[in-house]
Length: 132
Image 1 (cartoon, helix red, strand yellow):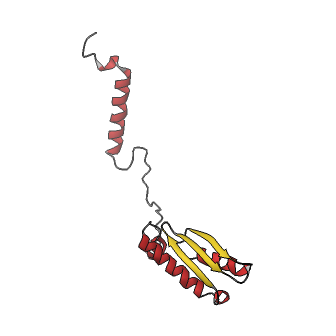
Image 2 (cartoon, rainbow, N blue to C red):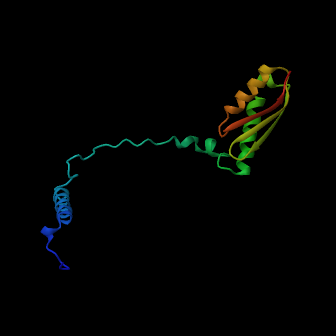
Image 3 (cartoon, one colour):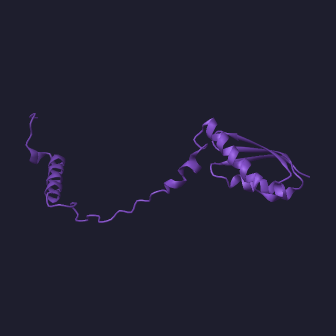
């Protein structure tokens, strides 16, 4: 076998060359080879105004977890039904909140968990509260 065989004896090489030539010829005329030039591509853009609320504490930092816990404490203090209760709120990395303390009834317990889950940056709520 000769080291340099003519191109017509290698069909795969010939086909690849023909395809490359066709693509380059079509690209030279503008657009894509198949004529589908996109005019508008929709790209969803997140609402960047909420970034500080959502990502504070969810990134795994201890300081961020404490800020999320402070927001949970403020949200619980704003609930009139929970005004007399003494709840403990501990924040952990990854947006985990642990609620502890004594409540008057189970409805207040459910309200406290729901309120904590509604705070930005909270990923999970662990309920260690005592209620009758």
